[in-house]
Length: 70
Image 1 (cartoon, rainbow, N blue to C red):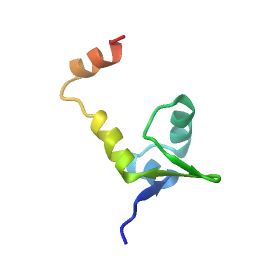
Image 2 (image 1 turned 180 degrees about the horizontal axis):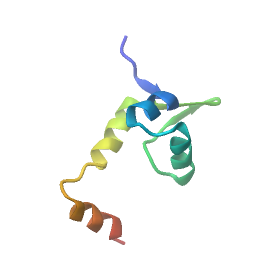
Image 3 (image 1 turned 90 degrees about the horizontal axis):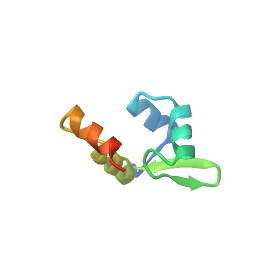
Image 4 (image 1 turned 180 degrees about the vertical axis):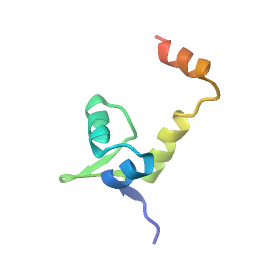
């Protein structure tokens, strides 16, 4: 059986960020969508892939125009 979700710690390790960063992103409404099952937070692999795809850029000017758009 393949794994469908990553824990907060697993995603933090994969992206080389701290679990606190993921916690802050959830508070700010940033980052991938997640499931909260009781007190446990997990990130569905499909949501992680979607978030990563939306975060791809081909140049720094592309990102700058995306960020500065109203």
